[in-house]
Image (cartoon, rainbow, N blue to C red):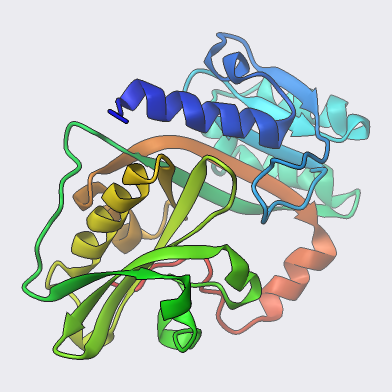
Length: 268
């Protein structure tokens, strides 16, 4: 398949539409859209649906996928502030304050990246790169590879690229088959091997390997994770959409009790 940026973005919007229970065209409307969140067999497998509130923007507008009882809160919020300001403080506090009274809080805030076919290319790093498969991951579910691989969802880890210093694995990008059309990339590099271009080398090669399999690679990080965002850009990815998700306050409290939450971080 000969991929274009337009094809890749359309597939991403179609998946977001499945996740949000809306139409892909809703993401390119001039006006904001509110839809009711529902479970879907083809949604990204890590999503816990239905959402109380999840805001999605590809830049044109906001699509809010919600539970019906929160319509007034969300409609008032997204129609009061500029699109980009709805995803950050100080305006975000307005939404959080309204939901906190009902036992919810703003929880996840993430930026998603898609490959730019005009710049994506294999990069070298001075180390041997090997394509890895699920059977190669069995001994790798340990702390230093916890961003590339997810022990809780081993069955989704399908493909990877490792950087090797002789026989030693020093960098790893791997992807999870989160849905039928899109595979998500995570990456780790051992501390003593960072700043040598390993992260971008394994990420870019893995993205190309995913595309060869007729799937769309995507990459996600918190927008405050500068190292991860830089790696995405260097690897040939560009910002595509953002999401902000409201979750039960009990879940937020539980996550805040965990000493270190690295699932969405990158170590380069």
